[in-house]
Length: 234
Image (cartoon, rainbow, N blue to C red; front, top):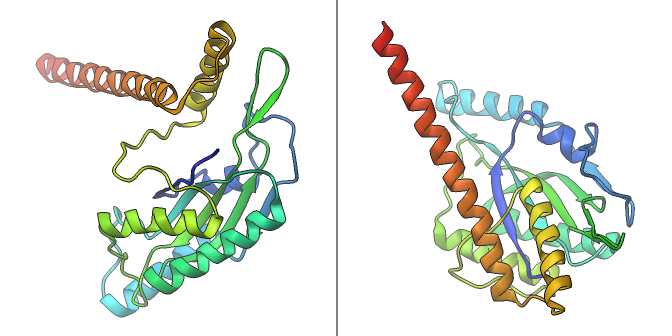
């Protein structure tokens, strides 16, 4: 059973193009159902509105490092668009009422996943929801760890899914890593002739994340070495 999961992050310059499929990644597979795109306003338009609101109320420009617009990746149990959309709207209403987080774009993706060695399509059903993360004066909302944990519970309740384990490490993977994880999972299940249990899957995800961390650290070291060498030459 797919457990509920929601993860927030600041939007990027490519978020909208990715979410609306204006830009189609190479890793997409054949849709199991239609994608859904509900856009109340463009990200750029909402950002301009937030900046104006902030300037009028705070009497200064918003800091460049502020993240007033964020998007959430939300796992879905299946490709039942009608039910999933209804439940996502319920979640958005609850987040607005309890925390003031205002959803203005909702996208359901039914075209991501991978094809295993037997040609069977395995889908990663999920939604991207874009939120205005500011209060009435345009200032960033401040949510603590307890709030974020409560939101995980709220997500499970609204989507009628089993909640992820409380206090567990975040083992979310990016698109490339997820495809690698699923490919490795398929290979292991085929060779071992068993279905990997939850602990074994967590171990694989952790190994992939450890590899990412190691590469990031190596890149930082190489970057620092290059910077220091440049200073020495001067």
